[in-house]
Amino acid sequence: MRLGMPATRYFSYMVTSPQKWQFVLVANRLPVRRLWEGEQTKWVPSPGGLVSALRPVMAGNPNAVWVGWSGVPGAGADPFEMDGFQCHPLSISQGEIQLFYEGFSNATLWPLFHDALVPPEYHRTWWDSYRSVNERYAKVAAELAGPGATVWIHDYHLLLVPGLLREMRPDLRIGFFLHIPFPAWELYIRMPWRYEIIEGLLGANLIGLQTPLGADNFFRATSRITGAKTSGKTIVYAGRTTQVGIFPIGIDTNRVNDLLEDPTVQARAADIRQSLGSPQTVMLGVDRLDYTKGIEVRLRAFRELLAEGRLSPDRCTLIQIAEPSRSQVTGYAEVRRAVEQLVGDVNGNFGIMGRPVVHYLHQSHPISELVAMYSIADVMLVTPLRDGMNLVAKEYVASRTDNTGVLVLSEFTGAAHELRTAELVNPHDIEGLKSAMVAATHRSSGESAKAMKPMRRVVLSKTAQAWAENFLTKLEAC
Ligand code: G6P
Image 1 (cartoon, rainbow, N blue to C red):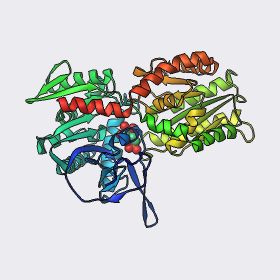
Image 2: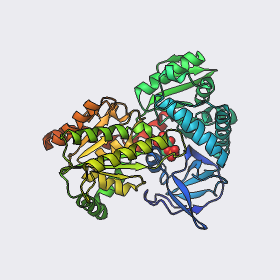
Image 3: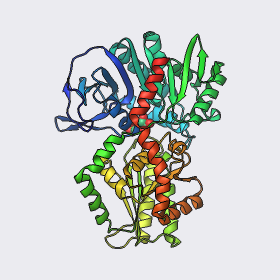
Image 4: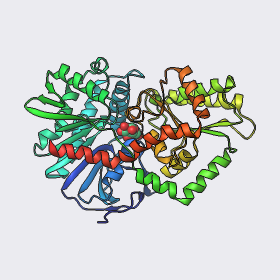
């Protein structure tokens, strides 16, 4: 077994034999997903903030196993080792992808937990599949966990796993962390299986949420639905005690620093700026293509500012990275259409030959490429309508080693609770957003540094590793 391999070595793996583990991490996805190239299998990084935050936490831990889906339908692959920890692929069929993943996880829970930005759908067949896939995750975790082991379960795909696992293995220490918001009580009670979900979560010894608002919402839903007694951060229900805590997730700042010092990343940054025509101001958006991210709002604001002459297409360029995501799920194809129509409209009206104003890339990019972009972006636009945390905002801040740059940040992100000196905006208020975007382009370097320094202190001290340590220490004490 190779220990302490550098966290960037994604693609090296080897098959290992079954054994019991002292630390079991359970998430819907593995940190890598499987791609077929002809007859060959290739593993590439999985999308999303959850994976990017958890991978460095697991790296180099020989007693740890990560249970998750390989990203392709059908039989799971053999277990393998990566970055000094074990990966245990779990199989999900094509039908379950439709019912459990695209259906209940991403067309019921995801919209409901994000303020019902698109109407959540409730289907009994989706729920049945959700329950049976959660049972599978719980069973695999129960089989892999050694006596008295710690199991850490993640995110909305697996809300029933803590309770199911508790029944199978009362000896385990079980933690659960929700990466997305927990919705207001008035919204949550629409869920036909509201009781089963809360009961499932209460199988954990410790439940972690990103923000105080999420924790309040969870407490209120729990006490109203189950009648459980709550006092301080403790819930007592059915003879068991569950602690609830607020643990805002961070990023792997070492990885960002290493990339910033890498000469190829530096050369790439200079290259990108030059290929844009070395504009005075580069604005940047980096998101999964998701209706929660407020990409349309930002493009509409940008279009109006160009039309009003408050931003000049000669001096200002916007790069919008939109990573492909959940294309089969209701709402995602629509947001793609709307975003691409806006991009076409802005470029058609304000671009010149050979130089679009918006550089739109519907592709996923490695972190090295994103860090190159962060380092040349004068203004970072993070405008979600709702977001559990938003680690892109933190990656941008971590990349601004000289304290330059302006972060325009939605109030409705978890990150806004910590990055208080960002240019905070309400993305529903387009005039306010426009003013913030213009103000960002006029900030003096002194003003930028004054805002950036406190944000850097937060991001550099509250890393992903510190977050995990904090959660696991609290879990140990439960
Ligand atoms: C968000 C969720 C993660 C999820 C990621 C990517 O960050 O909180 O749980 O893995 O999006 O979404 P996907 O549907 O591709 O797994």
